[in-house]
Image 1 (cartoon, rainbow, N blue to C red):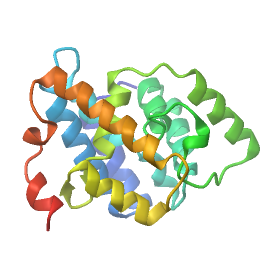
Image 2: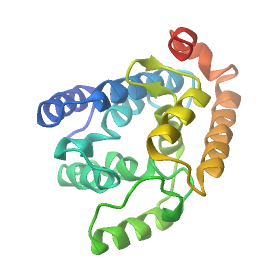
Image 3: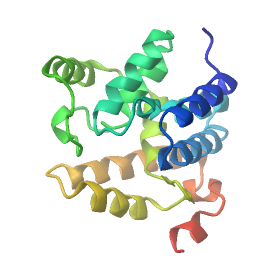
Length: 199
């Protein structure tokens, strides 16, 4: 089953009926940020970037969960043979490739935990993984925001973790990587980012 933005839109709409919530609008803004940045990167497809952004949280279709949505999304995509989207369903939460840097709760079986641990350790990240990791930190359900606002938003909801600062540093490192590629601030490509960040 070929994956493109039209198919991803259909799948997200279907998931929204299964489990409505703020995650839908968040996913849309992540996708738009991915597309806007990819348009300025020679080696990335803007349609694929948008598609992967739309689907990064698709595992939430199964209901309210913490880290379970990662493996639910992985399985959802693998059943459809969307291997890259499946990887990003897990990799978007692990900008540092170490399961111990998770800030969520592992509401999964021991077997699923061990699978995720091995998967994270062995996954080969490319710029699509890194782009979704970055854009996940640039998007609230209300629109684009500066990274620091999203950092605080997530920390208020999940609490401080021993890896919190290292995760922030990694996202800032990825931000710098993409800004070198595009030759400008990522914020220049996110309409309304100032207004949404400071409302």
